[in-house]
Image (cartoon, rainbow, N blue to C red; front, side):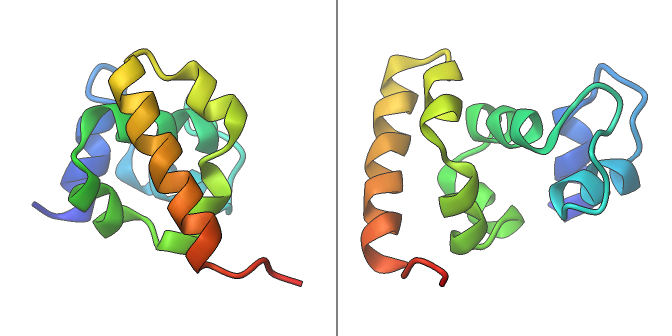
Length: 98
């Protein structure tokens, strides 16, 4: 499935363009509709499997976006546990920018 289709499916219930979603995810805009980058990322994590997430974001982007606050907002305890593990692994394998 194409990136644009994946992004559009995330906000299927709102009239928000793929271009606006992409701009927020890439940091070129603050919001798409009422969604911030963090909100879109959380929605993507809760909707798509890990390998799809990797198609949409680089490991560095995932590491930056996968914060404690975001993990606390996850509805599924099992998913939260999975992404806590992924966050720990990414912190070990991706050096801190500096």
